[in-house]
Length: 621
Image (cartoon, rainbow, N blue to C red; front, side, top):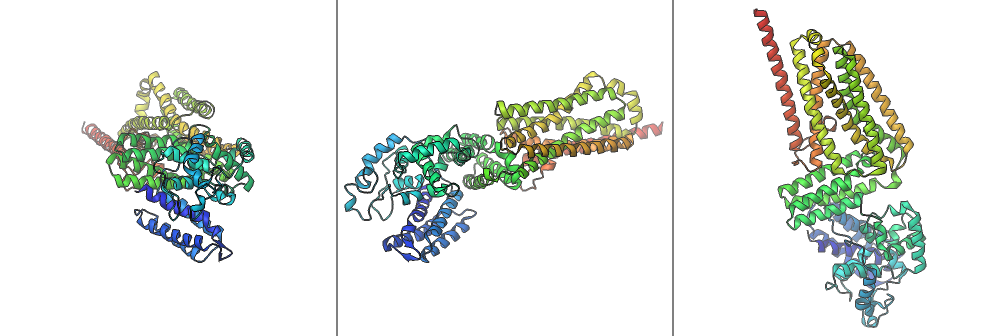
């Protein structure tokens, strides 16, 4: 993709959004020269768009560009045309993402020096468009002090003008300046319509308004913003004051290192750049960081509001990493564009203004039910097994195991909320390893249970063997299995909930947890009551199947966790995503489940064969 072509297209559209209101008023052309320029720019934008590479969604952009061209020809109101142009410009950047900000906050003193050396001759020392050369130029240089035009103009638009020049004017492209100098002078020019009083008021507002600060998640958000854009969510005076402050002090938006979606976007861009430069290893590492450090912490909140979008992002990022690993350049570029578009949707979905108590309640309820059900099946199965075996004294080991897991989960929640930040990689590795371990243990238990049930001699086995088999070591092993089975689910649950807790609506969150706990308790009670009435042989036969199915589910989830931690390759395949069954559309997760399922089936077949042979020998004697 030609980034310069995208920049030029965006610049044309931004120019239309800013200057069209000065060409038409109440359906009448007020400046024929500017109106002719707007017509030219809109038709040029349509041609430039046609030249961009085909991607999914380009047809919609073309339709918007044609709508903009018709609106200008029809002399539609300035606000309507400006909105159409800005919306199209934003859509172009979502479909064809390019770097939108400097790598670090610009040096404002350097910006002032560059302006004095390179710009003042035309634009004037104070930016009023009255420099010594201004009288000789047609059209006249822009007056950066013009508050109305400055209200519409973003720093990114100024940077584009410095970098690309402005067609049809005397504004050249300052390609001799470094990128850092171009950003610095763009920021400086963006301050020239503001005064110190506005900057001081903006500093006070910025410090006091957390919701306002959350709108600027990095330098890219600042470079694309303008007074007009900000005034859509706050009053005009606040928008002016905050814009004045942030453009003069751009480092304020970085308060700390970028996190969340800002970090994910930055890492994704760095990953694509690394791949295009030939460094596949760095591209993979940065892609993993984009997911684990940037996006993954947002999953709890997104899961409660838009599960479909969450799945789309996860799948897209997995496919992107697979394309890097397999060396498919076109798919890498297309994947990065798709993810950037999905990130934009996530940004909108997680707008703080959308946070609701219902979302918190539903999120807590579904998370605990989803994660708790598997652990419940394991623990209830162990309890029912020990009751059938007549070994109540070993039950306390199982109870110690799952209660300890809950206590450890509480400590994990406290640590994740107030003490440390548990990285996405640590979380995925913990979930992946514990899931695979639990799957292996459960597979062994299931085969063992099926062997005994197939022999039809459970009563004799329990009477003659359990006293020696259930020694202290095996009792501790059962406690360990109960702990692992429960803690792997608790670990994921508490990390999800600690993220939701920081977003408020704590009462709704606790209510969701309480409701889910009651439902799980009722399910456990029903399972225990039902198992008590089932004949011992049938109980162990059915339990062996349930345990084997759980092993298949857990190994699928474990493989997925290891893939997301970057410890296992991922090759997407066309297959349904069935999270409840631990089934994900990658060759590795499906292969792991198929292997475990085949081992279980072969083991069951072998058990029945051995049982039938034993019965024939008994009958023969």
